[in-house]
Image 1: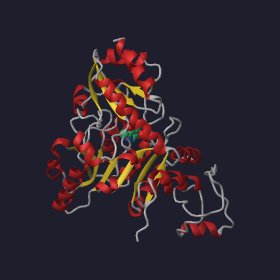
Image 2: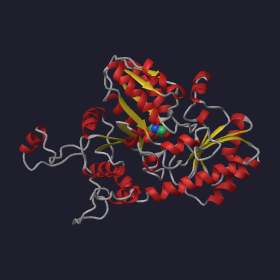
Image 3: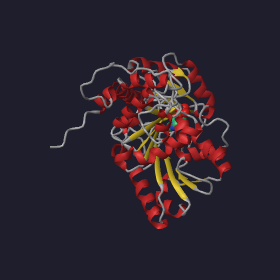
Image 4: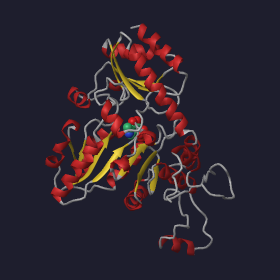
Length: 398
Ligand SMILES: Cc1ncc(COP(=O)(O)O)c(C=O)c1O
């Protein structure tokens, strides 16, 4: 009989340690940059690939490794590489796949940092990005070329909480692979959904990336990122990570390990709050629209039910009065905090044209579906009546 897999909550609390063992209950912090050799032969053993010899914390660190193993079990994946930030994870994972002359196929609605990396950095190294409209994923085959090595996407997208049809995207990339007889690595930024609500590997992606700064960290007190996938794919990511140097800090690893013990509780509560807040805000006369995948009014509600197991805790509202209206609401909030980032237990609000999409041209804003009156809300875990009351009083001032 197949042994039943422990639940996500159990895996997030215990990681791989679901067996009797002697030792600390919580994660020890190996706050060291380097490791003492028993004798010089250890250096030789390391050079020959002995995994039991520790050399230098940019390469490996026991605290970091334990969190990597925990995240891998949470994703039911073979391996994880932990990084110093989500952008370190994304840029390193991408640079481990592409070389000069290669092409990336991506959906256009992306976190601003990823989009700018595609626009401003990759072309300097001879890597170009072609965008496929998520409403026309059939175009993947025509847009891909024999040089296409990576398909990248984000769903739900930042900040407009739109979805990409992920099953369809994988199917279309497979067709393009067949047509061009090449491997196209598929990579999903799973930050908005988190592993609680979306399983990239069940959908068919090769690699998942997450800003662990957000739901994995969950308390707005650390920066980290993760790349999750097979041992084979991650071997290459780890190799490039060594030289780009975006390794995770052992103290951040400790904080993550602690945060993961409440991962399911937090994200579940945040998701419930997001739904209740979205429903309440939909009724407010100063709110032009609410975008939340859990609402029946969301144009992709059916798709959300198909590819996600929950709707997440990110929502977006557009208020009357454009950017001035949005600023007035954000400046009047007392419970919700006017700050960038997302995923923490405190509700955060930000105005995309002032934050993730600042200084973008009108054409770029249109491409990302961003308008001046938008407020992105990352629902926290506060009491829901306090949150609804706070948004109502702020909107009433408009
Ligand atoms: C969807 C998404 N991906 C990646 C990142 C980058 O993560 P980090 O800030 O940890 O580098 C962010 C940051 O906001 C994000 O929202």
